[in-house]
Image (cartoon, rainbow, N blue to C red; front, side, top):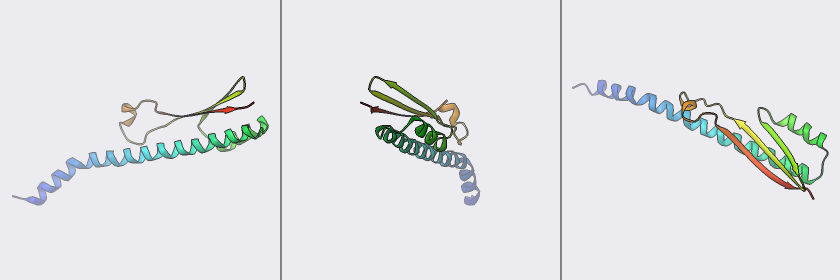
Length: 113
């Protein structure tokens, strides 16, 4: 029997699975990176509201630092609700079918009394 030929066939069968797993690991790493970045940005926005900075300064900060992220800021009574949402596009082929419209969503509530 030819052991080299058998190993080559097994490798060719396993290769697509390994590539899929590699891309999936990269995708979930990118999701974690984006989520941590958004957490940092929302904490900066929260601190700006707590320091009672002007809305113009906060809007300028948002435009300079947040790209591709939907920002919702809502004031109700003495609270400010901040919501950041970003839709993630997967690199892994076929992952879009498994996880349609995957959104990273970060929320904070700030007391503004």
